[in-house]
Structure formats: C-alpha cells, structure tokens
Length: 491
Image 1: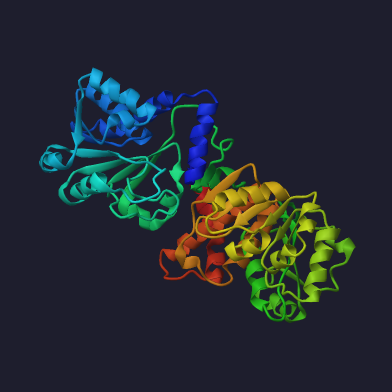
Image 2: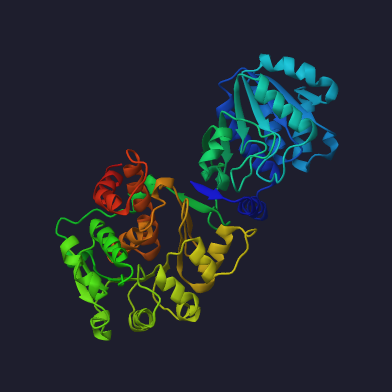
C-alpha cells in the first residue's frame, strides 16, 4: 500500500498521463474499482462535482445503470464548465438516458425528500485537490445529507471537505461510512481524527502497472511488509554472526540514554554490544544490563578498535561539550562501517554538514522535527515528505524523520510507518529506537531495511504495551520487543 500528500498525488496522476495513460482511461479504471463497492445496492444516488472526482461518479453511474441498478446523478452549476473528462462522461450519461438532475435552490426540498429512496449516496463532489470549505449549494447539500440521510455514504477517494494533507475537516464536510481511496492512501488519513469523516478506509489500486515510487509516492509500511523483511534466526547462528556493534552514548548528565539504547539493542538481537560511555554510566551498566560490554570513553576509542564493529550508533545522551565533539569526529572520520547518527550527534552534525557529504558508507540520521530543522531549513508551508526526500537525496543518506507515522527515505525509496501511538510520546523513546536500529544494522540488513524495520518494530512493541497502559515507557517497550518480533514472524 502507498501513501501520498496532495502534491504527490497530483504528481502521480500527471506521471501516469505523461507515460501513456489518458485521463479517460484512468477515470474508467477508477470506476471499475468503485463498482464492486456499490453493486451491493439497488437504489443509488451519486453526487457529481465539476472535476475528475465527479467524472469518476459519472463513469460509475453508467456501469451501475448497465447492471440494472436504479441510479440518479446530481450535479450543481453549468456542466459545460466542468473538466474535459467530466464533460465526456456527462455526455455518455445523457446518451444512455441515465438520470442527471441539476440541483438548485428550488430543487433542494425535492432532493431532501428523495434521500429516503436511496440505500447509498456516493460522494463525487470534490477530491483531494480541495483547499477550502465547500460553499454555496455544495455546503447546503452536504448539510442535508449529514442531517437527513440514514443510509450508507461512500466517499469516492476522499470525503468532500476533508483536507487531504492534515485530515482536518473544513466547515461543511461530508460524513462517510466508507471511503474508497483510489491508488493510494491520503496523507491526512493518518490523522486518527479523520476517521470521524472517512469511516472505514479501503485502498483500491487501479488495474495498471503502478509506478508508485517512480512517481514519488511513499510505501505505507505495515506488518505484512515487516514480516517479509524480518530475517529468521539461523539454527547455526552465533553471536558474532548477529553483529558486533558499538553504541557511543551517555554522559554524566544523561546517564539513562545509554542504558535505554543498549536495552533496545540487546532486546532486538544484537550479537555483541559494546557501549562506549562516560565513567558514571560505565560503572552502572553491568548492574542493569550485564549482556552489554561497557567501556569508559574516550580512552577506549582508539582508531584501531573502531574498525572492528559491524555497526555504530553515536549520539544518545552524548552531550554537546568538546569531548563529545572530538568523539564525534573520531567516529565519523575513522570508521567505515554503517553508522547511525542520533540525538546530540545530530546537533553536532548540523554545524558540520560537510562531514556527512563526504561519507562513502551507509549513514542513517534519526532526527525528530526540531532536530531536522537544525539540519535543513524549511517553512511550515513546505510539504514535509518532499523536504525529507529531497534532503536524503542531496546528502546521500537515509533519513528517519521521527513523529506520528515516521518517514523513512533514502531519496529513492520512501516509507511511512504504520505502527506506533500517542502513548509513546515519552522521553527516552528515541534512545530505544536507536538501539533497535543498531542491532538490525549490524546483522545483515541493508541500511534502509534496518531503518524501516526498526521503526516498525519499535512502534509495534509500543502498540502492544499501549493495549493495557495509558503511557508507554521505554523500558516496558524494550521488554516486549522479542515478543513483538515473534508476533511479526508468525503473522
């Protein structure tokens, strides 16, 4: 399944037309997808807007009428001003004597009475391109349906009045019982509040050779994807096989960060884990996590030692003093294994971004939104997914932009995460994620796989804990990681 913002969905449609698909073919294929959801009803009302969303409704009306269904199509305004695709199917409806009814102020009372005749209303007024509240007759018609219709409302692609990017409703948004999203999930549907208006969401991919990623859409990474990616443990596997990893984490001020990251790594199957940390943390680590090997920084970070690791993560609780800066330079300049840059190390990197551009190995950055703003200047009006993809492409890195439905991208392949919940908004959660990612990165996963799988496992474990808890603590999450991975494998 794929997902896109308004701009990405527009670009996707344009990409298809630039590569040989006419708008008429796309409308026809969309109505084929819609038909299976409407054919269970006998008495159907379809709302026809002026654009291609309305054209989908018109094409659908023709097919349902040919099946012997009682279909009435309602439109507002002068249909001669509708989009070319819309006019084409409007003419087909007229030629096939399908009922087309123009709504105006004088016909609203009759329309309200006719609502009782329908089992279902199909919403084809406006699609994902809507950027303001429905006005005039559209608003009045929506209000009538919301207040006087008791049957099912099926939204074509997106309910009229719902913002595609945010999932927030404009005034006069139609309430749907089901939304049939065409081609891809809409970005705004990730907002849990949007379900009030979308009802059940079903994604229907058009029956074409869908070039989703080439056209800029992101894969919505769910449990089936995680199952395909998660490697089975080898019967003859040994600890070195599953990675000799290094966490450079923790300081006198932030003792817990190193411990949380280390617990995440061990729980996720890291073979051998070294933790290079401040003395105050190194003394405590064996007491709380005897599986990890603690070493005092900076004495243990010889250039020779740094070369023996399969994966390195630097940053959780590292601090921002000169010792942290020199430690960061040692790691980024004297190692060549896959690297995760997290937390404080991202702040150091933001003032030395040229160091990132010189890297020849896989590098994963794991900022939250505030940290990303230090790495990359952008405004609130910018499409965040587009900014993330552009940054990863420019700097040849893998970006894990943490937040609700975390974005993971290498500039070519991009994902939104399906797991996780609001109960996970707790300090230390990012440290745990960094540890999980380190374990995967050191054990035979490609860097983009390690990043995406870690993000999903982290969120999925959080979902398990949240089933019986108001908040999810990082330590509680780490304890269920092995079980979460088992459930994914058995899915």
